[in-house]
Every structure is written in structure tokens, then in C-alpha cells.
Image (cartoon, rainbow, N blue to C red; front, top):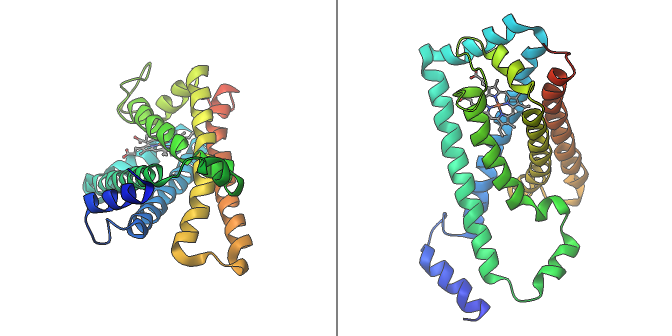
Length: 231
Ligand code: HEM
């Protein structure tokens, strides 16, 4: 099947409308990406309570679980799950379309204009999905935690990062998050129509600044436990 035939076949299989068009799916990917990066940023800020000690951190965790009489966290979890689902769906579907439409020998040419972060988006995305599953089993359900105590999130945090392999995995995952965020923030500002020579340096600085802040602070958590600063 020729490249043009493959593209037409793919488009026909998806049907018509906003979700079927590649622009529509890019907008969905950008909108859900904003929700997910927003969450990661707020989560990073919330976790700074660990530097205030056990009481402050556990009070913060209690607050999260008691918002709107306990319904708040479920509303919030539903939004996150729906956003993550649409994000993964749009990314997968756009990737499959790109692979189907890519002419032989195009890859080398494309690499000239793209950055390493952009070329690794799908791999950092898959790694992050695996990290999130592990992270939930580790610090939310405690399934893979050595001594989880539902009543003491601070102890779970400290005891969890005392295992060097686990702390190392979290650090690698944050570097992956960094690559994904850096290119992701750059891309969604483009999808939102801010791609203009006048705004490009602002977009570049915003993407780099937000990424360095989130990843930089997140990496301090396992390091602070490993070095005994948080204990
Ligand atoms: C080193 C960095 C991080 C630390 C120290 C950390 C810490 C925590 C802790 C302690 C909890 C449990 C809160 C509780 O049950 O009270 C939690 C939950 C969670 N974390 Fe993280 N986290 C980190 C990075 C991330 C990243 C990068 C993501 C997403 C990409 C993420 C996504 C989540 C999610 C989705 C939950 C579940 C929230 C809920 O209960 O619905 N975390 N995290």
C-alpha cells in the first residue's frame, strides 16, 4: 500500500469529526497535558510539607483525603484518570498515524529539525506510565512498600526512600519527567497558537523554567531521605 493510501485508509477507519482529525487529537493531547502538568506542579509544591516535618506532612495528607467530606479526592482522581486516558489515547493514535504515513528514509531527515527530548516523547511517556503505576502501588496503596502504614504517610515517604534502589528509580523517573515536560510544555504552547517569533523565547524559558523547578524539587525528596536530611 502506498503512503497516501495508508493515510487515507487510516483516516477512513477513524471516521470524521474533531476527534478523528489530527488537529483535534493534538488539541486533546495539549489540554490533557496541561491538566497533568498542572497536577505534577501542585503535587511537587504539596510534597514540600515533608520539609516541615511529620505532623505537617500527615496533616496535609489528611486534608487531601477529607476535602468535600472525602468526595474531593475522588473527583480529583476521576479528572486525573480521564485526562491520562485521553492523553495516552491521542498520543498513541497520532504516533500510529505518523508511523503509517512516514515514507522510507524520512527518519534521518526529520531528526535534523527535532530535539532529543521531542524524539524520545513516546519512550519517556511509556516509562512515566510505568512509574506512575509503581508509585501508586508504593505510596498510595502500599502494595509494594516494605512497611506501609495507612495512618502515617510521612513514615511511608521516609521508609520508602530509605531503599537506595527505590530512591534511584524515583530519580531516573524524574529525569524522564523532565524530558517529557520540557518538550510537552513547548509543544502545547505551540498547539495553543503561541508559536510566533515574538513569543518563542518566552515559551522556551517557560518550558525550561517549569521543568527545572518541578524536577529539581522532586529529586530533592529521595536525596533528602538518603542523606538523612529528612528522617
Ligand atoms: C519524588 C517525587 C514524588 C514524591 C515524593 C511523591 C509523593 C507522593 C505521596 C507521598 C503520595 C501519597 C499521598 C497520600 O496518599 O496521602 C503520592 C501520590 C500520588 N502521586 Fe506522587 N510523588 C512524587 C512524584 C510524582 C509524579 C512525578 C507523579 C506523576 C507523574 C505523581 C503522581 C501521583 C499520583 C497520581 C498520586 C495519587 C494521588 C491520589 O491519592 O489520588 N507523583 N505521591
